[in-house]
Length: 83
Image (cartoon, rainbow, N blue to C red):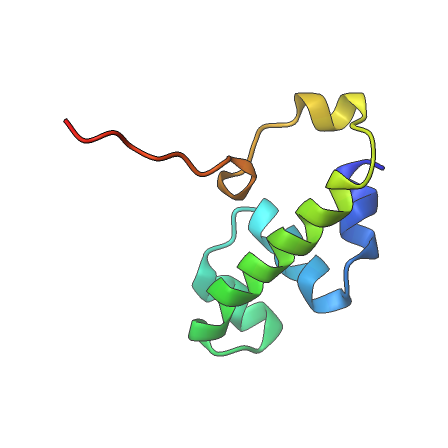
């Protein structure tokens, strides 16, 4: 399944939030578009990213997914070594 198809399978609010973020809208703009309080957008985007990642993890990658730029939420968490 490609990323676009996975987004389409998300519940409407999550899918819309992901699409708006992909269009580089700010948190404030996403809140306005969705009629949400500003404080609700960051958790909404985190949940949407987790749901999207889960959908993509259950399928084999397609060439589109292999070549698309990684989002920050796609990157694995790294532990920094103290200096």
